[in-house]
Length: 243
Image (cartoon, rainbow, N blue to C red; front, side):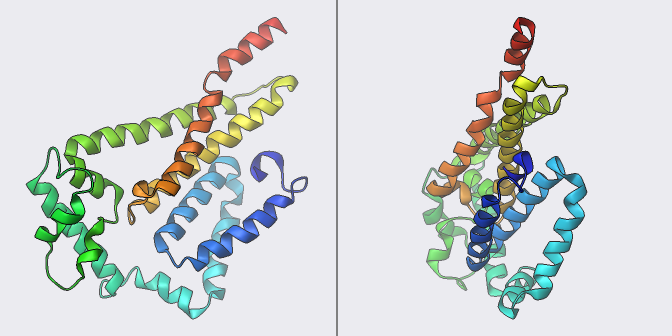
């Protein structure tokens, strides 16, 4: 919103960000951090590419000024001996073995958490850890097989493709003055949808966020917004012709 309409006239955006960022940090959830960073970075590159350096500087400054607990949380993600990192590796390997045994149709929805126990590599981790695979693609492939995974990938790629089509269409100029607001709105919702898609897919490499109803509901709402402007190019031409 701020990138489309400016921060000076809409200072309330800064207050919203000031409440969201600390909440995100306090979750101590690295997949959410990575996803949010990827989404924000992609949004800035689309709308304000010259500000990319500012983003990098802010991220480095944040890390340098962060308390030890935050730094340790970040570093542990690169440490293969860390318990949290080891359990992710174990889950990915378990999912791989399960999928190889049930490649086409999987083991059925909601059944992966039960079947995964048969494919665990060791008894080091508790049973409850295998409730899902902490990865969207692996979880969907385990439950519905390669066929289900291909359908899901097609669906996700189509969402991104359609949002990109709206963004590309809205990026074209000139736009008549009486269509300026519609142009800004189309740019805003399509770029936000693309950023949300990148954030969702990035975080989904380390978490089964597609299985969280509250996240999925918000994600689908954001991804549906560009479809409001999907035919705006034709309507703009009609408006100009009849103008």
